[in-house]
Image (tube, rainbow, N blue to C red; front, side, top):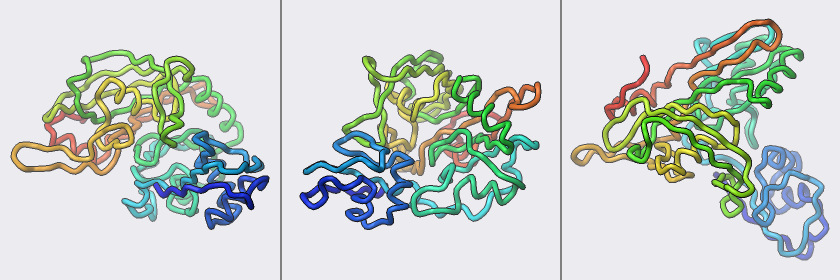
Amino acid sequence: MKRLRLSVGPADVGDRLDRFLARAGDISRGEARRVLERGGVWVDGKRVKAASRAMRLNQEVLLVLEETAARRAAPAASLERARILFEDAHLVAVDKPPFVASQPTLGSDSGDLLALTKALVAGRLWLVHRLDLETSGVTIFAKSRAAVGALTKAFRERAVSKRYLALVADAGALADEGDIDLSLSADASRPGRQKVNRHSGAQAFTHYRVCSRGMADTALVEALPQTGRTHQIRVHLAALGAPLLGDKLYGGPTSRALDGDDLLAIPRVMLHAASLSLSHPVRDEALHIEAPLPADMVALARRLAIDTPA
């Protein structure tokens, strides 16, 4: 990601944070507010979202403007109709491609999943949950005001069952099945990263199952998070010693050596939101929505001799 490290000088003391960011970071004040809202600003190692916060002498400010992965792939120009997994008058479920942001980010007002879905679906859309930039899979938008509140409440109260599939390294560290109960918090020493914090972190619980083991100590893992913490599956599996392939933020390899001199490149975090199960926000109806494993994960699994779902 593009990071700007800024220091508060004598002339900046007492200035509002958004004004300081705009001036010192050479961006517009509107852009400064947007990056604050999405959690892209740290002051002395702590994430800050208050635009009106007054600056103090010698404070160190980190401004994160864009994700590294966003520069590895051009923004999507359109979304295939086949990626609409479910639609009615109240909600639409979409199979998010990797490297597509869930919503507009700083410096981009097109190519995100919200904009791409709007091009296919009539009416207004509300995003009620998010996937990381590199993660693919089921994403839900509300289409009616009645659905917004009900869906938001369902995600907040953990009434939505989520199933993820991940390709991991060092799979020998994993039992065939198990529970991970490790609390998490933001890592102040590494902005944008989460860490295990057993003493004062937020509760985080994930059940996992190894679906198939492959070459080079890799595996396909099913993860069922019971809580919805940032980067939860990535941090939990890394904490067990089996980081996700492509997840360099948490120690996952970006390449894998195969037999001979063949080096297999891994271009992204290999994580896929395979399904969501929930109650319809308006009708008395149970919904189960699935997204097929994306082509890049299938191809990588095939090279590693890992069996994948049909």
